[in-house]
Image (cartoon, rainbow, N blue to C red; front, side, top):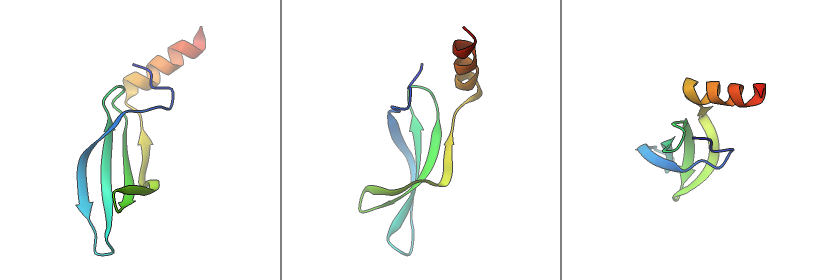
Length: 69
């Protein structure tokens, strides 16, 4: 499924840090992309800081197919 930049992200893991920030792993339930952000006070303060969003190969292949047509 294509998200076109509007991912529906669910938190799958969170680790609390000494500085009151949280490392948060999020997964898109539509396309399967994952990203690791830094949150503070339940707000994302640094999206993709720990790991930029990675799309699964099947999603990348679908995008390539759509651009070929």
